[in-house]
Amino acid sequence: MAVGVPAVEASGLVKRFGGLIAVDHVDLRVDVGEVYGILGPNGAGKTTFLRMLFGLIRPDAGTLRVFGRTWGDAGPSMLDGVAGFIESPRFYPYLSGRRNLNLLAGLDRGGADSRIDEVLDVVDLARRAGDKVGGYSFGMRQRLGVAASLLRDPRLLVLDEPANGLDPAGIRDMRALVKRLAAGGLTVLLSSHNMDEVEEICDNVTIMRTGRVVYHGSIDQLRAQAPDPSHRLMTSDDEQALRLAAGHRAVAVSVHPDGGLALRAQAADADAYIIALGRSNLAVRALHLEIAPLESLFFMLTETDPEAGFGEPAQTQPDTLTGVTS
Amino acid sequence: MTTPATTATAPVPPATACPRPVGRGRVVTAYRWEITKLAAQARTRATLAVCLVAPFVFVVLLDRQDRLPKDTLYGRWVHASGFATPLLVLGFAAQWVFPLLTSLVAGDIFASEDQHGTWKTILTRSHSRTQIFWAKALAAATFAVLLLAVLALSCLAAGVLLVGHQPLESLSGTLLPSGRTAGLVLAAWASTLPPLLGFTALGIMLSVLTRSSPAGIVGPIILGLLMQLYAFLNGADTIRHLLLVTPFDAWHGLLAAHPYYGPLRDGTLVSVGYILICLAIAYTALRRRDITGG
Image: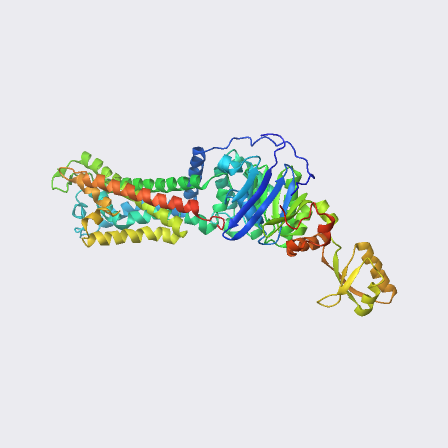
């Protein structure tokens, strides 16, 4: 294979279901060694894109190459070196975790059988490997899904909402596992609707909304365009606090619909305002971070009408943050 | 849209150390995988165990009874010759046992993937639907052949070991020597393979179309019984010859004093027709269906 061939390269990809355009002219490139996130709310087209990547459905237009191969050229061989799962991984519940991996190794061949113990260790399932999968928790099945993917000794790992349905501890473990795998040089393509997850794990991200790409670039670039964080502020006298905010141009304070005040400002400006409140004998009873900066930007990108533009970030970075992609 | 130049492309590492199979090799790989999966299922093992043991139990129970099943072909001979046992069981099994036994695997082999939601697990591992279809169809056929062989040999062994290898009367009333009878008994059982595979294909088709294991298993039995009922009611001959249960009786020609093979030939053609039509429908349905939900 040629040097420099991207792991995934989509160009003008379109998928329609009847009158619904699930994926609308998506361009995307995931380079080898990259940890790439596809982010979007439910129905954004992330899973449809991954289904096309795995050859489960065919695109109506455009091309999708995996390590330079298309389904048309290579058939199922396109997936050699690729592993992962779409939605939640599924197994035969009447068999143990190890037996399921044994079976899948038989399907993979290429020495996959010899890696079973190793991958069970990686996902920390070795002790429960003899138990029937029917008795596994959701998180254990997710981890077994990762183990089943690693059996293929992949160069590209594709994970669709890997933390979906997990409890906080499960989410922490899953993120740690993905980061560990990525640190080992594996190319990871991760779909998620959780900005925190993508921010924590990925180098680059594509944000989708109703089948279209509304942003793609690095997480750092995205962070630079993020609006101020939004807090909910409770004081001993909200009316006075609101009046006091007029003297602080760097903070935006308004009445919060659920009571108290909504405060939007960079950390240093918010600190100055809070100190000013104290000096004015106003007690701060509560200050909660409601929306993190990137999350705020994510909502702007995915909830605003793309035809109407995306406000400030879109105006400041028109080349990377677009309302309607070509 | 511009591609971000945030990550430099790196050399692609060499492909996996061991080359993976391609084309037909992948069908063979998937076939082995399916066979391993079937072998891991308690139901499959139990079915084969029953086929192995039941004939011996059947012969012992018959031996303790004074009244013989005289209304059944070779029923009156079960105490006189061990060769009558496999032929008695063959006549009985053709009614609903064969459709049931083969449907236990064929009717479930596709639908179970829907039931467990494992289609995506399989199809994201470098195998196409076509490859998986033929692997599963071959595995279901393998099971059908295996259970027929086990049941035939077990019946023959039970009869010969528990009753004896006395000569058997042909359907024309002449006595058949023991050595020749053993071969004829095995040939009679072998002659039921085409319609058995026809029911296997029927089970596969229902398994794909309904995505339901119970429907895939029970469907062929009900269809088989309806065909039996039509044949029993002396329906039109042309239609009766096109029924998939009719070839199960084709072995009668082998046990005549002057053997005739017409029913065997016609039955094989009818069975092949069922196999081709059912597999074509199942294959087309599997290729076209949306698998992404399962």
